[in-house]
Amino acid sequence: MTSSPACDLVRFVTLDVFTKERFKGNPLAIVDLPLGSDLAQESKQRIAREFNLSETVFLHPALTESEPFNRRCDIFTVAEELPFAGHPTIGTLMYLCHGRSTADSPVQSLTLQMKAGHIHAHYDPKIGIAKASIPHNVRIHQSPVPSKNITDAQPTLKALQLKEQYPLVSIVKGMTFVLINLPHVPDLATLATNGPPIDHNAIQPDAGWEAFTAPYYYAIVSEDEATRRLRVRSRMIEPGFGEDPATGSAASALAAFLALQRGGGGATYVFEVEQGVEMGRRSEIGVEVTLDAAGEGVESVVLAGGAVLVSEGTLHL
Image (cartoon, rainbow, N blue to C red; front, side, top):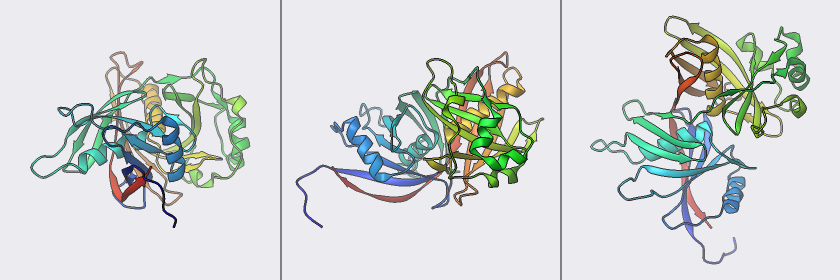
């Protein structure tokens, strides 16, 4: 190993998110930037490619000493910056809260500033779960995706009785998903991870909403209409990107869509979303969606989950 010129040393950690068990859930890297850091966005992108995880968070120092838990963070994939993503949100909250909590002084409330908006969060130290009121601008786009384009990308689905088309839904501008409801949970195991993508010409977001788009396959495991609780199994597969063990933004989009389908003024729906099972990285994503007084819009979306520390070290920049 050759020596390198003088450099800045920056702390990083990796966590597995939406799980309490190491080597399950969705891996995340967090780079904890020191006070006075002026790391350029281009450098952040290079570091994200070096980690080669689905997302890497760059956590900026507290804005003021009086607000140590009001933090700005940037989220990068290996290819681009995102305005919001679910598992980076929960992972960063768990890092800040659990890592700095003591029996006498547990951290319970904090704020993250993301490109999509401010996220206010609460941490329950008794159960080790973070809950975040996430920014949302739910939009069901005018042009659904034809079933034929989906089965062209996933030929095993041709044997199933699918709908003619599937909704294209955004949780915020810049995070859009094709929500593909499969009849039964075992159908999820038939999906290919190395096939062609859905024809991009078939995915037509409304004007001004063109950005990240991915398919999200799901099956409803159970539903209790009296308590408005649903259990869901899901997979997020995007050829060229691979399979994501846990996609909080997609789970939030799905939960908002299903809640709006069911309606009810002021109703709150609780979703337990299980993802990553088929790839051996089981994840548990919680989402609570409350509708507005008319039952025609989304009042709030709360994303919940845990995380466990896997590694920590120093970056030489």
